[in-house]
Amino acid sequence: MTITRFAFPTTIHFGAGARALTGPQLREQGCKRPLIVTDKGLAALPLIAELKAGLEVAGLSVAVYGGVFGNPTGPQVMDGAAAYKAHEADCVVGVGGGAALDVAKVVGLLATQPGDVMEYVWDHPQVRAIDAAALPYFVALPTTSGTGSEVGRSSVISEADTHIKRVIFSPLILAKVVFADPELTLGLPSAVTAATGMDALTHNIESYLSPAYHPLCDGIALEGVRIGASALLTAVQEPGNLQARADMMMSSMMGAIAFQKDLGAVHSCAHALGTVCDLHHGLANALMIEPVMRFNLEAAPAKFAELAHVVGAGAAPLFVPWLALLKRSIGIGPSLAAVGVKREQFTRLVEIATNDMCHQTNPRACAAADFERFFAEAY
Image 1 (cartoon, rainbow, N blue to C red):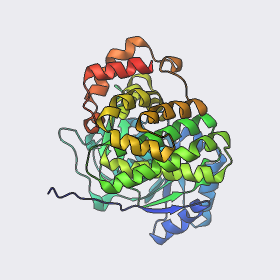
Image 2 (cartoon, rainbow, N blue to C red; image 1 turned 90 degrees about the vertical axis):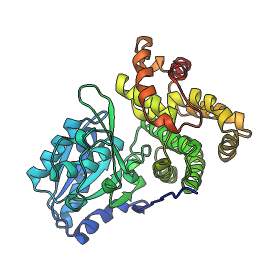
Image 3 (cartoon, rainbow, N blue to C red; image 1 turned 135 degrees about the vertical axis):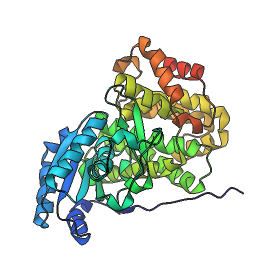
Image 4 (tube, rainbow, N blue to C red; image 1 turned 120 degrees about the vertical axis):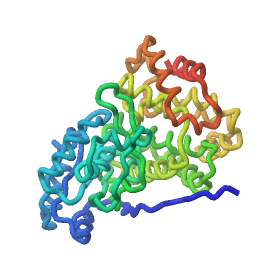
């Protein structure tokens, strides 16, 4: 029998008001000069000012780097590392959605270790090793419920010139502590709630369908689907519903924990759409999930039956129609064409999706012709 290693190391403080524990946690670790890493939109909002003030009340000297935007690029990381050095920081507080947290994970790495961020991506021909002893203390506060980046061991950074997404993968960049406070998501617009919620559901669904051996993750993913499926519509329609927000935050984290088991072809398509069209990752997943799931059904009928059961759809073939109904109910656009994707972009989309590593663990093998059909059906 193959020996398989499992790891679930992240400490999580979950619940309304958890953000207030950030300052005491940093003080307990001997930190004095945190750098808050966030995105441009959040940096201008009262949320960051309030968090900064709370850390200062705890006796900490705080600076803010708010240079993250869009699909984050290498220069954004390097600018963050420069801000870390300028502040003489000794820890990083990541605040935001997946983009901000992915940058926050590696700002301290690039501030304390040599080279460019792209030299640390997993498939670089001379990939640099990470010196664990040099990494600063890092904590994360998610403000969306989608990527689950706060509990993930990878950072996805796009090349500045090609926009191709690259992955830095190491358990060493995991947050030491996560403060998962659903109150931080109460202000999310409905469209963002819908897109990020579909991202969370896609992570849980694809990780569950992955043929890789990881029963622990299978259990987490299936429950993550159940929780997210029952809460997403409420979170979109009742943005102030704290229980729905908490459930979506939990589903998001569960999906990210589960996808250490790996993902599938939906994510290969979404990565291509992010690269070529700069499409929001959660929205891209939402638009591509139906054609890929129809393709996958024959390869994993028992798992589709379980998915259909936990969402209340009935038999296995009804799971994809359930997805379609959910998407319509939460206002996800009907097609790639509706969000501005052009047919002349298909060749590049298919090329990038085919070369993407995520579909290697799709339950059914995919070739370029399959990806061409997925994009055509979604169009």
